[in-house]
Amino acid sequence: MAVTSRLLRLSNSSLIPTTINTISRNFTSQTTLHSSPLWNDNSNNNKPSMLRKRRNVHWVFLGCPGVGKGTYATRLSKLLDVPHIATGDLVRDELASSGSLSPQIAEIVNSGKLVSDEIIVDLLSKRLESGEAKGESGFILDGFPRTIRQAEILEGVVDIDLVVNLKLREEALLAKCLGRRICSHCGENYNVACIDIEGDEESPRLYMAPLLPPDECASKLISRPDDKEEVVRERLRIYNELTRPVEDFYRKRGKLLQFNLPGGIPESWPKLLQALNLDDDHEDGQSAAA
Ligand SMILES: [Zn+2]
Image (cartoon, rainbow, N blue to C red; front, side, top):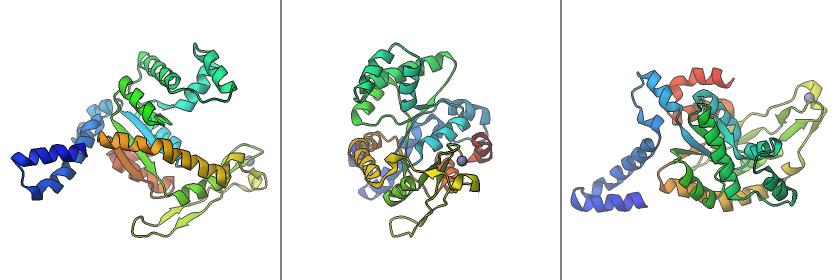
C-alpha cells in the first residue's frame, strides 16, 4: 500500500494514470530485487563475484509446519555455503553446551513455558557473532521470526534481505503430516501419503509421491503421537494466527517471495532455484544437496 501511495504521489506530477498499474508492478519487483544482493547481479558472466555476493544472503524461510522449510533451507544453505540456522537447534545447543543462558532456559523449559523472544534473539545474535568470527558470511533462518514482535526485534538486530514464504495447500499439508511414519527399528522417516489433488481455477494439480519404506521396515512403522489430525489442525491454526501477520510485515517491506510448492522435492527444488535466480547452478545445486 505504501508503494502504491508513493506511486500515486509520483503520478500526480509526471505519470498519466493509465501507466500506474504497469509502473506499480515494475516498482514492486524492483524493490524486491533490490532488497537481495544476489538478485542485484544480473550479469551471469561474472561468476566469482556472484558467488561472493551469494554468501552474503540474509534470508528467512517462512511456512506452515510440515511444509518442508527445513529441507529446502538445508539444501540452499549447502548450495550457497551459508549456515542454516534453526532457532530450535539454538535453544537445544545452548542447553547442551551449558552456555551462559542455559540455567535460565532450563528453568523456563522445565516449567513448561515458552522461551521468550528476547532470549531467542539473544541466542541468535550470539550465533551470528560467533559465526562471523569464524569467517561465516550470511545465513538462512528457519523457524524465526514466528511472530510480529520477533520480526520487529530482528529488524533492529540484522537487515534481512529476502523472506521466502513456502506455501502448500492445507489439505496437502494435512495429508502429508498424517502420512508421516517412522521405522521403530532403525528410526528412518517415511511418508505413506500419496497426494494427488485436482487443480482448480486457483491452483494447478498437485502431486506428491509417497516415500515408501523397504520391506525390512514396512512392518515396523509407527506414527508420532503429535501427527494426529486434531494436533496438526491446531498447529496450523496457531501458525495462521501468529505467523501469518509476519508475511504481511515483510510484504509491506517488499521482501516477501511467495513460493507455491508445485509438488514434492523433485518438482519443487528446480522451480525454487529458478524463483531465486539460482537455476544457473542447478547441476551444482543437486550435487551440493545430494
Ligand atoms: Zn527400519
